[in-house]
Length: 139
Image (cartoon, rainbow, N blue to C red; front, side, top):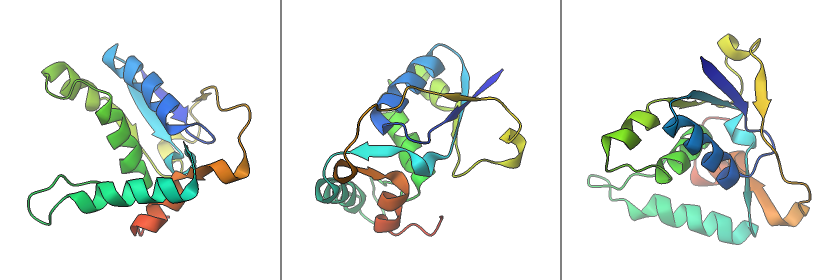
């Protein structure tokens, strides 16, 4: 059975840790509204950090860092998995991320994880803003 998780208003790190625990346990997870996930911190520091990650890879050799919001979220999940072992790679195949809500998951019941209780408007950025800053063409 597939669990559909709505990322709207969730902090990216907390969302990814709960998703990582579930997929390592054998669940299949679909994350929708990835562009509405929140990255906490100052705006300038967030943009500088993601730009540094993207610019680190060479054109041919890598490491390649994604620009799209759904792939940034999926890469965050990958960073929390034991990627060097087959257990981690198999778990990574059990997670799917989408910008918006695809038609096949519109009627599905969406699980809303515990979001932040108090956030100052100046202290967070959504993944859609980060991906637009990095040059993503997917809105």
